[in-house]
Amino acid sequence: MAEGHRRLVAVSNRVGPLNDEGKAGGLAVGLSDALKRRGGLWFGWSGNTSSKGTFSEATTEVEGNVAMATIDMSEEELQGFYYGYANRSLWPLLHYRLDLAEFDRQSDRIYRSVNQRFAARLAPMLDDSDLVWMHDYHFFYMGSELRQCGFKGKIGFFLHIPFCSPEIFTALPSSHDIVRAMLAYDVIGFQTDTDRRNFANFCVRELNGQKLPGHRLQVGDRIIVADTFPIGIDAPGYARFAVSPEAGEHEEMVREIAGDRLQIIGVDRMDYSKGLVERFRGFERLLEEYPENRGTVQFLQVAPLSRSELGAYVELRRELEELAGHINGRFATLDWTPLQIMTRGFTRRALAGIYRAARACLVTPLRDGMNLVAKEYIAAQDSDDPGVLILSRFAGAKAELPDALIVNPYSTDDVARAIQRALTMPLDERRRRWETMRDAVFHGTAAHWCDSFLDRLERSGRDEDGPAGEALAEAHPS
Ligand code: ADP
Ligand code: F6P
Image 1 (cartoon, rainbow, N blue to C red):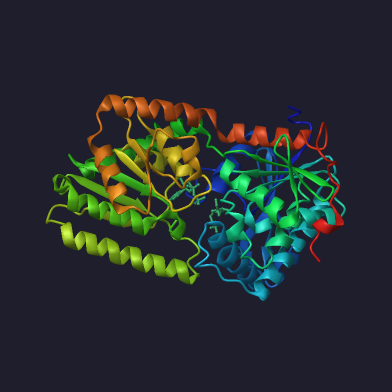
Image 2 (cartoon, rainbow, N blue to C red):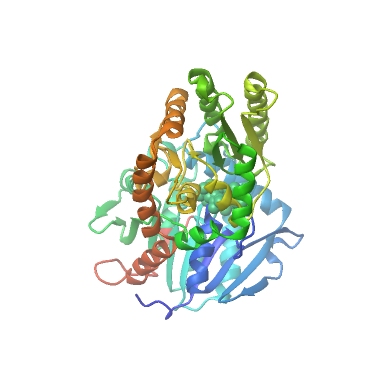
């Protein structure tokens, strides 16, 4: 590929960090691993609000070969764009939670205007030879807005979260506007084939589009590529983290506290999509149905707070704390607390050590774009004594990790049975399953994800694809 010839410009709501700081979120982790390798510009929100909002001066920070340029949002922009449209409308909807989705005109308007403002601020920093790569559901309109600003180069888009089925997506009042705007992108990437198919089916059924060979879609006379590019982690780097002194200290600490007990771990942002309530109930069922585990296992759930201004997240925290109290109250003894929940962040090295100390890892989201925790757990294991991954059938990672113990996270019995199986699994089976998964995690790295997406973007507009940079007038919502 023509790596190094064109500058990469990545755009996402959250920018950085590029170091080992504790920071919960798969996008930041995957993208920083990829950007550090290739270099380029990373543009997005500063994480701050100010009265000037998106008109504030851009702050630029350079770390090695990556420049990070960020702008503020005003309080009104933050509320309407991030808390409102992105996280009250799009997030629940795309995670199949129509029951939690709220739609209102005001946040829809602010979401569009923030997309327009970010495009207007980015445009002067660009050259038409740049490869622009936008990320996630915060910026569905931004490619189309960048075209309105006159940018003629290639623009790709990657969706880190699921794309729900068209039956659900059409409930969004602006669903047609959003997908039409997305046609301004040259390449759209999804985590799984299911997400890609859902998007293609929306284009066919709702916009009279047509599927073309080579994962291309035609709507009107616009042809774009919509393909699957599963995100990964820097697996060799992560495996090195897991044997670093900091990881060793944390591994030791967890092992010491566990003593003879087997440790189970869960690591997730505190989000309703992660299936934490169902997971806790599964653990409770384990203690009910398989009483030999009472006093001999302990479960640590690391769950950093996320989006805690939103009602659904406040309610989730209350429910989880209540449920943890109920389970501990029911089963704890003077010298044993079955379940511990912790909301603090860890550095990536520390987390790698904690993973390594755990006999089983519960990754049981009700829906997840990919889930990088599953891949990190595999990369962190000791080849002589690897732990067992219990993985939801609704996590994107399931496609690459079928050798995990696959569960239906909605079934308390299924989760309890899988935990029991993990705790009693013989070493040779643990090794065999782990080796296949390790190969998959080391093959599908962040570097591989980045290279294959950018390679497809470079090639778009050539060969059989439609003309790049040609945004249809209809692709721009009125
Ligand atoms: P999502 O993007 O929905 O949060 P992922 O599982 O894909 O879910 O990514 C979560 C990322 O956040 C992982 O890299 C994980 O290590 C990191 N993370 C989660 N919890 C913590 C924590 N307490 N401290 C540091 N990093 C965390
Ligand atoms: O990976 C999905 C994702 O929504 C990212 O886009 C986001 O950065 C991360 O989870 C954490 O969410 P937030 O940025 O809302 O804290």
